[in-house]
Image (cartoon, rainbow, N blue to C red; front, side, top):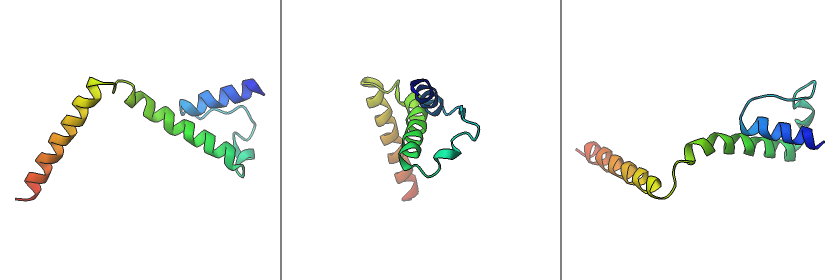
Length: 79
């Protein structure tokens, strides 16, 4: 059971779409807990790669760039 759980957790995190059951994860279609965990892992896996380099100074620089871009868009739009 631990192998199945680990395999499906990694598969969901990587959004690979692999499952070890004959019907993939359709036997768990009515199980909210399984669906919530798989869905959360898919979202976290998708966001982690984008968020990893955003630490400390890099995050501050990115936030400043977005703020500057938003100020430019607002001033252009209010013409």
